[in-house]
Structures are given as C-alpha cells and as structure tokens.
Length: 268
Image (tube, rainbow, N blue to C red; front, side, top):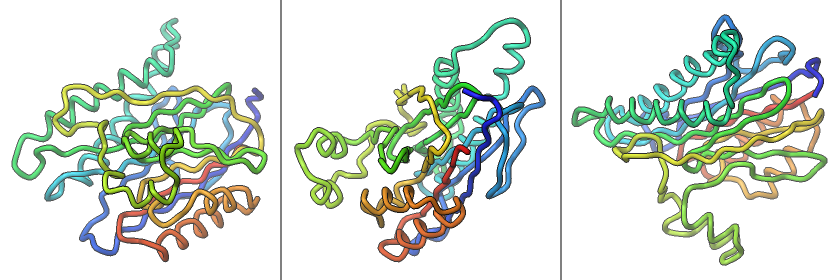
C-alpha cells in the first residue's frame, strides 16, 4: 500500500429530540511519535507520516454517566494508541489488533472503576473505531455502533452488532423489517464498562484501496436509515461533507429520537 495515499473525512453529531444531552462522542486524531493530534470536523490528511484514527462511541447510564463514559473512552484511546510509536522506537513492533485488545480491556476497567457513585453506577459505552496505517486498516467495535465499507458501489458492514436480534437478521432467520421492529434490537450483550467483568470486542484487519469510503456511526443514524439508503449515499461519489449532511438529515427527519453521530472517511 502506497504511503502517499491521503484520507478525507467529515463528521457530525446531533442530539436526539427527546434527550437533554448528547451521550454520543466522536474523535478524529492523527497518531505519531509526538502523540495524538486532534483533527477538525472535516479535512484531508496524508498517511505518509501519521496514522489516522476515527471513532464513535454511544454512552449509556443514568444522570451524566452516558456522555462521561463515551468521552472517557475516546479520550483514553487517543492517549493509548500513539504509544505504539514509542514501543516501535524501542525495537518492539506490537501487533495492532492485540494492542487494541489490551487498550480496550484497560479502558473497560477504568470505566468500571469510575462508576463508583449513584450517578455513574453501571455507566457503559459502545465503540466503533477505525485505525488507518500506511499498510492497513484495523478496526474494533463493541456494542451496536457500526462501521461500513463502500467499495465499487457495494456496501458491507465490517463491524458486528452485539445483539441476538442482529445475529438473527444476518443469518437469515428474520428480514430487515423484522429486525428493525424487534423488541430486543438494542439489548446489548457486549459493552465497555457496565459493571461487566470482561469485554469481548470484535476486531478485524482490512486492506484498503483508493476509492474506498467508510462510515462510522452510532445506532441513532441507523434508526432512521435502511441499508439501501446508506448504500446509495455512500456510492454517490459526493464529497464526504455532503455525504455526512445527506445521511444525517435523512436519519434525523425519519427518526431523530436518539443521538445521531457519524464520520465518513474516504481514501483518495
């Protein structure tokens, strides 16, 4: 994979219509030996000298616990991921998926430790994270925040929803209509935090190609969009900021009850 490839991105988050606050968080940062450099809401960056990380988290819990859990999760990932450069400089080259696994377990424990009072007890968060290096794309997800890949007009979900309803849909036991109205659609069996002793994320390494577009989003976006809507928008070839606005507007117009957060990334 050529190190000269660049990445374009755009992001947006919108609070749900029935909520006092936004429990979703998003982050975009460049990872280098200097640490994490926070990136703006939209832009273009080369992969020649930096890794690029884009992530969305949906927080859950009472009082202010939801937004605390999601923001704490992403802040800690921005602190941990750049450490790989220091490890490499010392002559050790960590397996990135193994490193992500250790990082998520560490944050999982920290969120559980922070849930030590009535306002934060049981707080938890989902995670959908993409990590671009010059050679490969690494991803991790927990819960039902999603990562989609659009390549040559075809849409595929790279992440896994940690719900029994999603598994039933994907193995063909129910259709998309039945899935979207399933009473247990949001019943997660994997979250970061939540007082659970362990967390078992989904990981993958995916070679990327020029022209690939990725969508990282919270379930609030999915509430208002069918798969075909996402596929059509992602294959449209529009600038990434237009794709973000189109997807968000349609999702919010169709639903908008939950927080809606998304990042669109394109390799060029």
